[in-house]
View 1 (cartoon, helix red, strand yellow):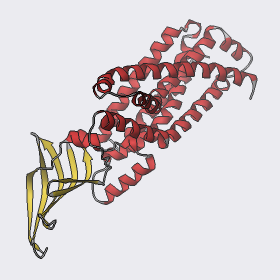
View 2 (view 1 turned 90 degrees about the vertical axis):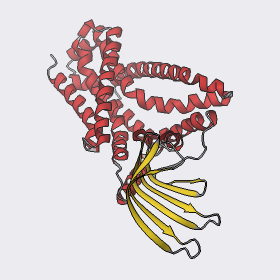
View 3 (view 1 turned 60 degrees about the horizontal axis):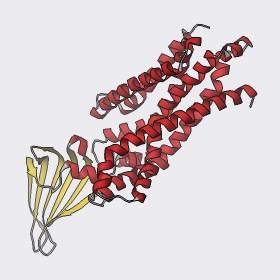
View 4 (view 1 turned 45 degrees about the vertical axis):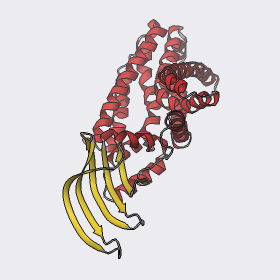
Length: 360
């Protein structure tokens, strides 16, 4: 590694560590004060506070790392330009790409590390954090459910649900088994979908099967267009016990999608989340590239305050645009892969356009 590359890397890494530590500290502080009431109400011990911090850090890093990379590149190149070091490098015959190449390679390496972390460390941390907040502190049901494995008993009934989406107040693939006092099957009620409105579940396309309590033979089969269902649960109950997509690895999420689609259920939300999990780490590389023209446009007029403000503005715009496009993906208005990758591509093209129009 050349002396110039070592100098640029040391400069970049110092600012990155400071920026990342600042973001993590601010995020943890805000999140902690939002949940301090729960910790005090449920008399949390020191181990709970330590677990909250340790399991929160990997999740926070994946969320703030692109913004930290963006701000670091802006501040690194801005400071070099302000002190005329960048001018000196270019006067020695070094092209712009030769100067920023090591920073782009490092950003790509960080993106790869984040992708590995999203597959290994982050799901474990997310599960531990949700277990701490929902079960240990709030005392909610300790059973963790996954899509396709939602089984529970409600009085004399056994309920099976293939796919639950608490945020949309909807369920897919509902089956109720009503048992007699001797645990023999009396009725089997299956429904394709159910939505929660007016404090009740409304199921569509039901099929009711009645069995003889003595012989167990099918005696009646009826189709019903729509009917209220008493499932003994609300969407909030599923939200507190259902493992979210962030708690499983990308490979597990892909297997879940294939299984749901093979059974004829809509797995659009899961597919969007899977593609978004793959695309998110490469936002670091996009942000690093986008930061270059913004950092060099002001030349010697660059300042730390302007760099921080500019980075935060770009980050907010990116977050709003990404959230909007992901919502379109959830609704089916956009294909999942387009919803996950389009904003990265748009911001990359903006960076290329600005770089090509940058004065030498």
